[in-house]
Image (cartoon, chains in turn blue, cyan, brown, orange):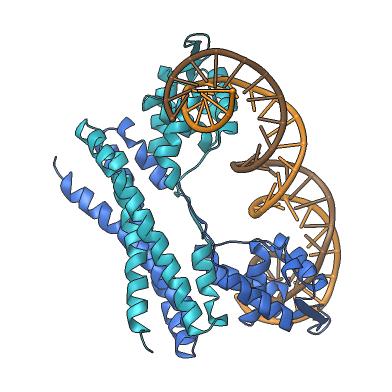
Length: 182
Length: 182
DNA sequence: TAAGCCATGTAATTGGTTACATGATTTT
DNA sequence: AAAATCATGTAACCAATTACATGGCTTA
C-alpha cells in the first residue's frame, strides 16, 4: 500500500474529487474550480496525467463512457484507492500552509508612500476581502445543501475562508479608524 | 522608466528591503526570513541575480565593502529605484492573493473519514493556527518598536496575520463545540 | 453560423527551489 | 576543533502553468 508513494498532492485532489462524485477529468476540473480553488488549485494539464498514474497504480478504474459521439472516460475509486485516500487524510504530519499575498507585501513596504497613498492600499485590500466574502457567501447555500445531506466539511472550509477574510477586514477598519485625520 | 518591465515581484522585494535598510544580499535574505516570510518568500538563489538585474537597470548602485577579508557588496537605491518602488506600490490593479493550505484541502475531503478522525483534523488545524498566532505574537514587540519609529506598516501586516489565524481558530472552536458528543 | 461549453490530451515554458561550490569569521 | 553564521554565486532540477491541438455538441 505504501508503495503508492511518488504520488503528490494533485493525485490526492483527483482521488478526493472522484470520491465526491466527479466522474470524468473534465468534471474534476469543474469541481476544483467551484470548490477548493480558494485554497488549492490544480490545472487541467495535471489532471489527465494524474488519472493515468492513479489507474496504473490500481487506485482508480476507468472506462469509456462516450456521450453521443463525444468521447469520455469515467473513473471510480477502487478499494485500494479509498484506503489510500483515507490513509492520506489521517496522516499526521506538519500541515503545509502557504500564503502568497501581494497585498500584504505591498502593505509591508507602504512606508515608502505618503499617508494618503498608504491608506488607499489598505482600502484596496479591504475591498478585495469584502468582495471575497461576498463571493464565498454566494456559494454558502449550496454548501449548506451538501451539509444537510451529511457532508459537513465543504461548508466548514467555506466558513474558514469567510472568517479569515473577515479578520483582514476588521484589521483594515481598525487601521482606517486609527489613522483617520491623523 | 516603464522600460523597467520584465522586473518581477522578487525584484520589488529586493528593492523594498534595500529601502528598509538591508544593505547586502545576505541582509536581504535575513530580513525576508524574519518579516515577510509569512506571506511571501524568495530564496537566496533569486536575490543575487535580482541585484545584478536591478544594478544593470540603474535602480540600485552597489559597491564593494568587505568586512575584514570577507568580501561583501552593499547596495543603495538610486532615485530611479525609489521612484519605481513607489510607482509599483501605487499601481492600482487586481492584487493577487494565493492561499495553498493542505489543512483546508484535507478538511474538504474529511467526509471520507469517521467523525472522530475528522475532528482530529480540525484539532490539528486549530493547533497549527494557535502556534502561528504565538509565533507572530512573539515578534509583535519588535514591530511595535518599528511603528514607534514611524513605520506603522510591518506591525499592520503582523496584525493581519494574527487576525486571520484567529479567524480560523474561532471556526474550529465553533465546529468542535457543535459536534461535541454529536 | 459563431460562440461557448464538453472533453481529452501534449509540448513548451516558467518561476522557483534545492543543491552545489567556495571561503572567511565567530561562537561554542 | 567543530559548528554556526556571514557572504556570494551558479547549476540542476522540479512542479506547475500556459499554450497548443483536436473535435463533438449546444445555444444564441
